[in-house]
Amino acid sequence: MTTTAEPTAPSGRTQLKFVLVLGGLTAFGPLSIDMYLPALPRMANDLRAADSTVQLTLTAFIVGLALGQLVLGPLSDALGRRRPLLAGLALYIVGSVLCAVSPDAGLLVAARLVQSLGAAAGIVIARATVRDLYSGTAMTKFFSTLMLVSGLAPILAPLIGGQLLTWTSWRGVFVVLTAFGALLLVVVVFFLPEPSSQRSPARLGPVMRTYGRLVRDRSFAGYALASGLLFAAMFAYISGSSFALQGVYGLSPQAYSVVFGVNGVGIVLTGQLNGRLVGRVPERALLLSGLLLGVLGGAAVLVSVVTHAPLAVLLVSMFLLVSSIGLVTPNASSLALASHARSAGAASALLGVLQFVVGAVATPLVGLGGPGTAVPMAVTMAGFAVLALTAFLALTREVTP
Image 1 (cartoon, rainbow, N blue to C red):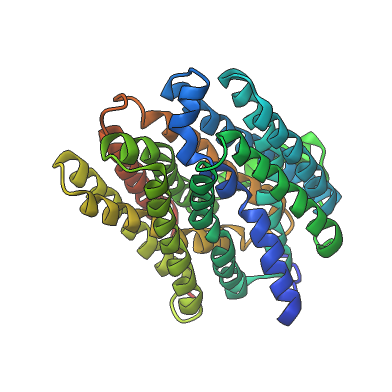
Image 2: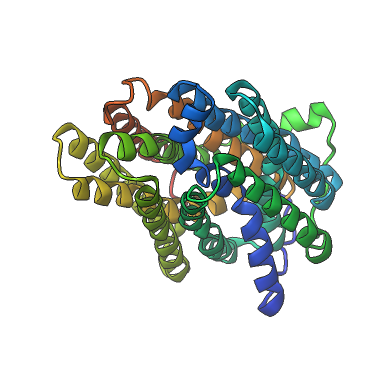
């Protein structure tokens, strides 16, 4: 059996730099999704489009993130991390500008697709870079630390978006996202060196064989599906909560943004708890705990909606499900990538694809019952949380020494 040398993890100020830069890149997705959520009802009115049509801007973004990662992950394995990342950031800026000036919903959907293809570079390459720099429990701890930075995105994004709507239109949100993309482009140019990584060819044949090997890896598939299916429950919450909490429960855009931000605090708290427990508690046990928390939260959301429980009960239930992401993501990512140093970009891409493709499937399901009910959202959240736990238990096995 051949072995590969494990990376020497950076420390001190160098590690802090990587946390901030990679955290910013990881936050691309949450910022680009969450910042404009409070504006969805207003966008539907402004563009004279149905709610379901406006929700396609979210679906298009998720699909673009998946497709972009499939291409950019293996490309970064072959060319290094910097060049595909810089190209992706430039594409993100172009897409954000197009979103800000789109005259109708159809063009906005197309612009969101362009924007998402660029955002995919930040997400997939940030995750692959962590695998370049770390291994073992150090990798899990770093993923948990990233939750502190990237977890601030779902806290701050809807708050910023809600406040922006008090003095500008939804187009101003995309202007802010354009500025964020430009800032990250400058930061990467000057502060993110090319990490040492094992290069793999980018030819179609070897890339497809790599993807095939990863899919056939039972443990990788189990960890990736567990993370991806729970993310689908999260996307159901992301795409449906704006209409449910504002349309059904009567929250204002500003109040909704506060609720959304509080749930983001849960991700940060569980992520930091995970970082403290890693090394003392096996990553697999922490992952299982997160999945069980997600099932509990999803079931509670469904019961709350069906029984017309007070709003406070529903909000606590949502908090439990969203918080479970902070336990599931770092452990599932670390366990899935642990044995794939040479193909970290491709493995990172498949992790992201499963998250966002399944999320794209979940997103339109929340609107099936029309604007006057939250039941489809609740059923989707609970169902995907159960599927995530089932995939983990069915496909992964605990390794005993």
